[in-house]
Image (cartoon, rainbow, N blue to C red; front, top):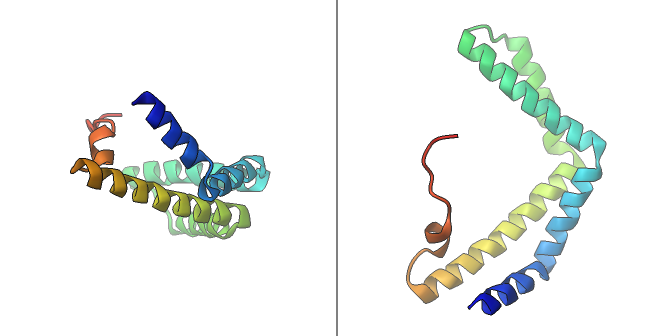
Length: 119
C-alpha cells in the first residue's frame, strides 16, 4: 500500500500543474516587493482588527488598507501564484473525487485533521 501511495505522490508532483505551482511559489518567495506587500497586509489586518474591537477604527485607515490590498492583488507575482495555486487545487480536487468514488466516501474529509476550533 505504501508503495502505491508513494507512486501516486510522485506522479502528482510530476504534473505540469504542480511544477507551475512550485515555480510560482518560488518566484513569490524571491520577490521582495510581493513578500513586503503580504507582510504589510497581514500587519494591517491585525492592527485594524484590534482597533475595530476597541472602537478606534478610522475610515482613512480602511482606505489605506484597501489600497495595499489592491496593490497586493494586482501584483504580477501574487496573481501568478494565485492562478497556479487555483489550478493545482483543482487537480487535487479531481484526485480526491476519483479516490472518493473508488472507496465510496469523501477521502479528503476522512484524512483531514480534526477541527477542534482551538488555536
